[in-house]
Length: 285
Picture 1 (tube, rainbow, N blue to C red):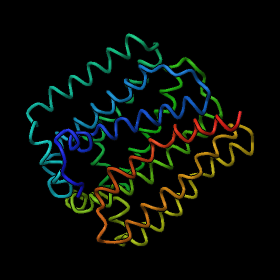
Picture 2: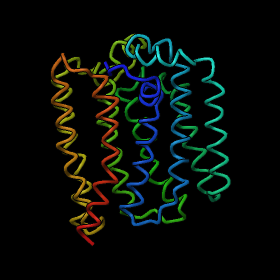
Picture 3: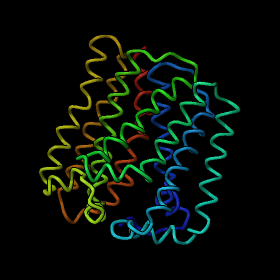
């Protein structure tokens, strides 16, 4: 398990803040890659929206999470009675910021994203019992829409570069969500969800598939650069291949803490995106 530290550290990880900041890092990467002027309040907006969705999910699924996410449940139970008003606070603040700083189309799109995030907790799992990998596809697609939300909020047009980067983000998030489902096997089995770890029923084969997906995910970047649709510095994201290979390889050992890999390393990848792209802009104009 993740080593116990201060309540603040546990809240940062189990409360979803680490993942919410990671979502902001994805949006920041979109801005850097497409050379769009950064509006810093937008990164706060993404954080607030993500926290709202996470808080709602944690509250609604606390009972089932006791099977596979007991440390998180134990932490959240410290303040579970405050989760509903906290979720409402995040949501209201999200829409206040969006209404004050955003434009009409971003207000519509931002509301749609919030709806997508909340709907999976309420309705998505029913389809996950019927459609293989629906949970991962739905989650990855929903978060990938941050690409377009970022562009529309900044009053820019969605072009070919944005579409290519959207595909890249979707594929990277597929690796993320499928990997996360490894730790949720027991609870997902109890709910009857058709996730890939359950379908494969073999961790080694599943991880080999993720290695394949890891390499495939960079095809859009390479194609984008070769066709001069994406800037050359996009290739500075390629080291992420080895980052993913590291935690996938570590997961092959049953002694490895899968919670640490999921919460810290997998979600932590997105923190490197804007950093690598920024370094790329320093070397390649």
